[in-house]
Length: 269
Image (tube, rainbow, N blue to C red; front, side):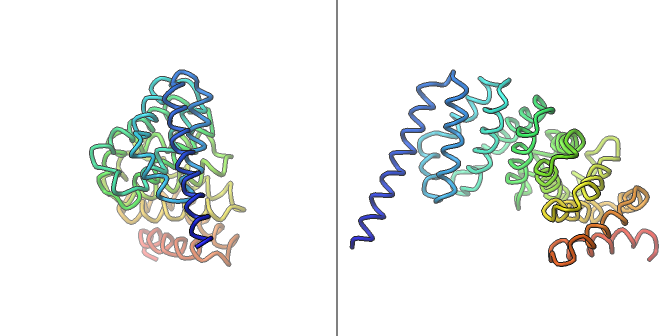
């Protein structure tokens, strides 16, 4: 009984915290520091329990985030925090309705395009697109049609030394490349070079290597011509280098091997 009472009081404390944060966001909509800190505090609560995420939906946090991102378009903190919170809120399948997807996608793409030089916004925006597109063909279509592939490739190209941007960007592209149509969204047909560069630059980071191999695998799986181009651009050596660097990392080995098989098939191997 005592443990149950403690759990109840802890729950009430967090309930009060969620509502207090939302009230602060509503009371000070024109102060970017309040919005940024409020978003960060809510995201921290969401990591404790899905209940707090559902409560935030009930209190209208989705609309609050979108409004803040529109009001504070030039504030990197609000944009990064907004992308992060939208990413977290998308995990609630009950409230993440189809008609909200293009709205959220539009807000994130606007942030990515407006703040290309800011690695925090880029990492947070890429992570949001990754979350939106995970296992959701409709979201992948919206992101692809809205210019998401180009935005993600820009992030990889602009921040080639930042491991967080590289991991999140490659992860988002890997999800988008599950659909053949998105493999054709690279107007220059050279965007895969950014993924290869991620594998070469971040050999010490297994998370980047895993998502990079995944992205190349999905890209080559859906587009035979891309297999030849990736091979000619040094994709084989990049993947082999990743596998050698992390021989004890199962996902890098699995995804690297699958990508190699596809790319080698274009050479008749």
